[in-house]
Length: 268
Image 1 (spheres, rainbow, N blue to C red):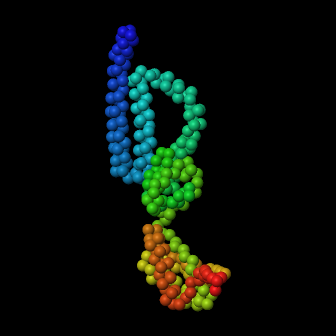
Image 2: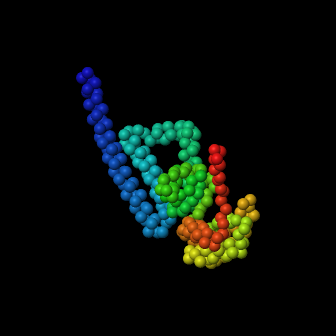
Image 3: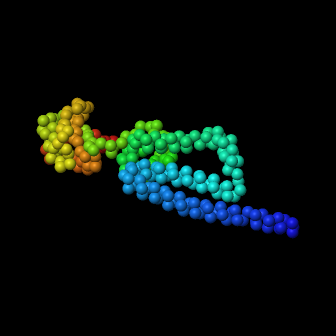
């Protein structure tokens, strides 16, 4: 027992300084990495670098510096970095196969940074999700939905799929389909629809407003109506025009057809 205790003391005396030094290097290294990343983001911001690219490069730099710090720490513990590198090289194929999804997501993130189909603040539709781009990280992109839920999409899927970006253009077209009864006056209906869009303060005069009879349906005459607005006014105009059209058609005595349900009491 005394021999084991002496051996343990010897090991403690031999390795304690290395362990303490490694811990100090780890703590100081993480602190310095935080300062470097924060400073680099500040420099990029001052030079007008895009916010999306700032965050992506910041995340990438953080990962690289932490890997270098890890190698430094294990070297201080007496583990030969050459042996460590040989182990990584030998396991490279297995790691690559296991992480192929992550590597694809990393490559997708790089492609997004290069081609810039989206940026932070854009309102997009992708992979069945719709929301505002909150952050583009190394492996994933985060969206905030209109009801304030966070959606995380892998960059590999995002870069390889269809993306609808509603924020790219300054204006958007608002489309409406209104149906009225077959007894309705076509010209009167068109004048009402045109007047509502033309008088709305958020509807642009150019491109021109359009009101066209688009279909003779089974139970209604359908009008395709469209106007152009600034992208930030899209939903305001959409909701307000629909409400105003309903009120105006009712006031003019123009019927908006809808299915009628008749309850038949068999006892009567």
